[in-house]
Image 1 (cartoon, rainbow, N blue to C red):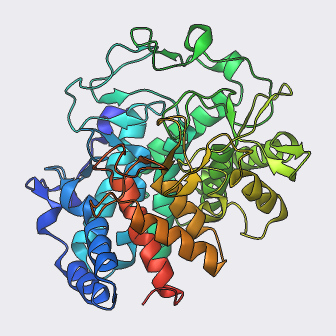
Image 2 (cartoon, rainbow, N blue to C red):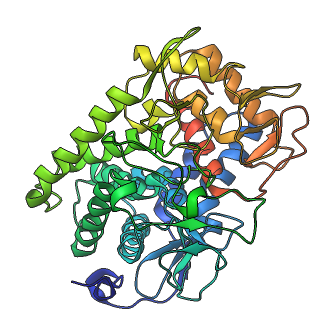
Length: 446
């Protein structure tokens, strides 16, 4: 079956009118209004409502084929990664609100369709209009593709969203023929990229814009040795990897592959179960053998990147998957000893992208200017901590660094939050709303 035969369809295959979701999801809206009414702090209440509905009201569209297109925010394209996270706050309402269910199942349908088109691309256009980075040098192109940076997490996030959807609803219907076709392309790609140097045809570079580093060595990247891990060209920040094995993304792959293995019957992929189990086992073995670094100060920690040739990149980036986010993604427990050592490293000056300034302290990224902290990084610190004082401090910093906008941003100057990047960034907004829910559910917010 060819990918062109798997064009997204609506329920029962009937075309629907193009609709913006800002006019839908009445049941969920009423429930959220009631929930917000229990938040006593006016600023927190207003920010929660704005951020919770950010994706729904500004980025989500039901297309005539019934699938869902989701802007990342201020860029007119859909990222596989961002779009999956942008709807996570809506998952608890899938059972009671048909519009919410259509939103998420429609998004899954479109995500799997895009992966079927090209499993190496990270961002896509709403229509085959040839928009995006068309000056890039790569081995394949399509008018659907906005950007073709191979990021392992882009293949993991739709599978993670399917996992979350099934967990909330028990409904495996999104695991349809389009899903199975996309899954086969995912498995083919992961197996190929375990042997990137020998088997992969993927190339990517951006020679017309040398100020934005891309893959060296003719677009193939720096050399790597075989580890069982999956090679990865770019980080979740869309920045180029220093070394080809990005550890947090491989950990994320292990998480989603384990779920697929355990739910193979329900997802209609029992015939692929052994293949999935073998791949997961190889990745987990690669993590055990190649991901841990003995640090003289912090003990055994996870490296951010390695090449399987003895080189390690010791850092963390605020973009998720990150090393800080591992319990959030389900890779390990919050009290895992190696994770705790890694966390101490991440939240210290030993991490080159941890900043402490007059207004805040937390993780940043080489993607943004020096000494810019990411709201996503602070939120991940909060969500992966059981220390009430630490969580309260993180929440305070979130409230005090919105620059009076009532929303989250990408990065902000740790000394002056009025200097920030991305005024409209739905991924960070969604995670803030989830932080509010987490704080309130644990009795830490009135």
